[in-house]
Length: 123
Image (cartoon, rainbow, N blue to C red; front, side, top):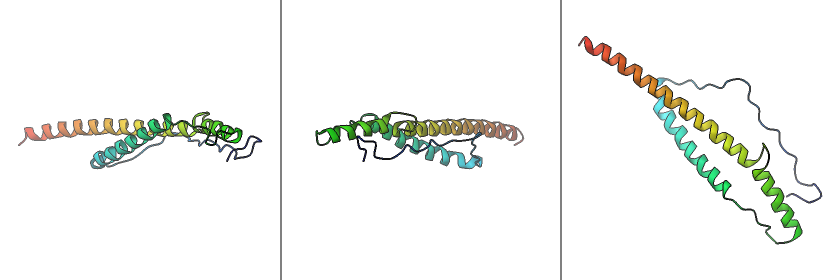
């Protein structure tokens, strides 16, 4: 609970990531991984939409609940470590991963098509 006198909790430090993160997959695993990333992305996008539409009313209509509602809204939407920023950052990472997997799948499919065409010449 947040109190007008500063009670509550301190902000947690933002996560930090050093360097480029990679995911190594066998080409045959790309379709399954892509399906999983797309499903996760869809779920996170729904949660972002839900959070984006969330209103925080003062529950009891008194000064304490008004202050609590303000603090809750700030923690939900304001600043780099807010729930909204964390969730949209995660969504963006999932989207990037899904796009990278789509590109890898397209490249693999193109390469396999070329290999099949080459070997088909000698049938």
